[in-house]
Amino acid sequence: MPHISRLFIYPVKSLGGIALTGAQVTARGLQHDRRWMLVDQNNRFMSQRTTPAMALFKLRLTDDGVEVLHSPTQDKLLIPFAPQTHDQLSVTVWDDTCTGTRVSDATDAWFGQKLGTNCRLVFMDDDSMRPVDPRYAGPEHITSFADAYPMLLISEASLQDLNSRLTDKVGFDRFRPNLVISGIEPYYEDQMAYFTIGNIHFHGVKPCARCVMVGVNQQTAEVYPEPLKTLSSYRRFGKKVFFGQNLIHEGSGIINVGDELQIIQMDEGLLSRVAAPK
Picture 1: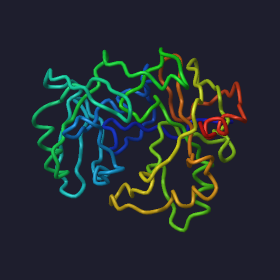
Picture 2: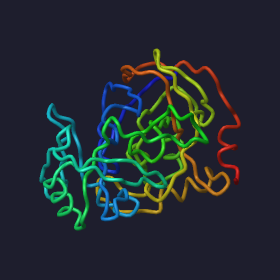
Picture 3: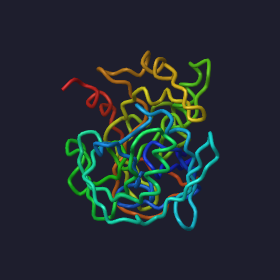
């Protein structure tokens, strides 16, 4: 039976992930997922695509906020759940513009010193609404500072299949999923158009196109051509390489590792329609 085998959140966009045994599903995705983001001097999002050293920050949740550990120096910073300023900025994530509240002078200085660049840490308040791409979801669906969608799903079987083709195996952290599922065949998630977990309804709306960021080693920040090179040899559709499924959802509640998925609808053409040249 298909079931959740792992759950992850990434509180600060493009920094380290946190493995959970259970998570609260909210309107914009899993609680605390990508609610914070580092922006550059132009208030544009920063990511491992251009700043691989962001992989060297490891996170954990505490009662007071998100603790960040900088692996090379072992220095720590606590990001409080509530921003310490009222400075609202207009920030950009790809082609989207939304509002973020600057957390504090101290966090800006700490991250700037560790990364060697001027940057600011912003938080997405509850009243900051960032709609999902209207081509794939209605206006009622919103997301966080994630690239585009509230949640991302991959399967254990798909990663195992990819690793069977690689000399140096890679882990889930290369692909930054929220939900990892077991009990299905490799790439079955490409066709999962509608499923439920408990009373929450999930819709697979767009297979996830991959970029050079999957080549960033999450322990060393070194950048490699794999696994994108191998993925390109068999997962290229149109001009893009796909791995994983983006999700939107209706409902809220707790999901846990071990919860079963009830698959309601499959769509064999989902990947081909998304990959077709516009």
